[in-house]
Image (cartoon, rainbow, N blue to C red; front, top):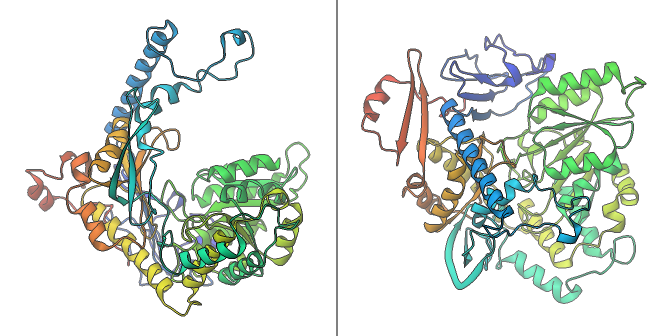
Length: 583
């Protein structure tokens, strides 16, 4: 938690102050955050309920319970994981030796023989991980689908006879694979219904492509209507749309910050935000993930010391955060970020790529989720690729900001206009969420997504899995740890007609490989039950389950969630600290 009065415990709460609002139990296994409104009854910290209450003297920062849990990697698992990567590295160097002497066939990209004396075009060591580790499990990614990515999808079957260097299609289709990997949060990625029908009508009228930029002759009336609707949806003065979500960040941040400016970036920000910050030429300083102490320290130093060498004041300070972090499943602590932003007079850039449509009672993102004023966020960014089932992104805020970007943003000046059917998909789905289509379909989908998220997270936790993130986040990371489990889990789940995304180093820390589930409103309870109740997940993994009580530390390896001493252990140990209940 920050040291500012805005985040000190109120009402005489006796909870111990902890770093970043996250408290470790004695064995260092669980970190959790639980913030509530100051009007809630007084609570005292308990070893089994890791809670931190954040409130201000002028009203609570949080109007609802805010609960996030992160289990630290157990020491034994960390050691075994490092050993696994060590063994893979040793064998990788052995195979490189065999390739060098032509004993093993080499498929890697490399310079021609006549270019051996040139400066290397391909860095050999940088490609080591790709050659020897990634290629062995490459069949878990880039799987081609041949249907709508809804609650279920069809996959094209493929096979490899050279250890995943190349793939051959067998001509068969794997039907009805449960889709737990797409960002189809509200289920609008569909080929039937009002969105698909409207997009088809617009295609017949306008065609598919515009073949021009917005500043020339590519500005359609549908583009204007979409931007007005986005501004109304977000509750701000104006908005501007772009054809690519990644470029919305990477091409607009350089227009907002430059030399003499300071960007304070969360350490887990998306690659598009990182690239945009680097392209801007501004000074970049990174604060620990969702750590308000770290952020405030950087803000104080920036105000006190100013720019390096000259010590002149920074032209502007821009805080860059995300609404939902796609690898952690965590939600930004926006009330506290806004409090710090106002205190130190900095600007706030909020990326709502994953949170817009997926959070809040009205589906209007993390600002709606916390009940905050959109005007407190200087730059609102989001994408249409997830909850809206379309493509592209937007920037929203003050009218002056948008008018400035229209003439200074590279993505606005040089990029081709958005495709008309994509624009219509955005308009129709957004009106559906807002209820302007005369139905309650959008509201029902927002509620269904929230219910599915809570239910699926609860079921995984009951099964003994270690999951990360906020209780209300539809991004559900489940920890795998071991490098061998990355490929095995993805393959075994596909054998059971369940499509998942597995992630490992370098996208995550080397000892924190995981599977990432993305929940959708299109998922029914029966579909989620099929994944969780039929031992589909449990039968693919050894689950390391750690429990702690005041007298002993217990490490139990559970396979298929069966333990002959389970009943005896349940009698003498407290509830697992990850199974927490909101107040």
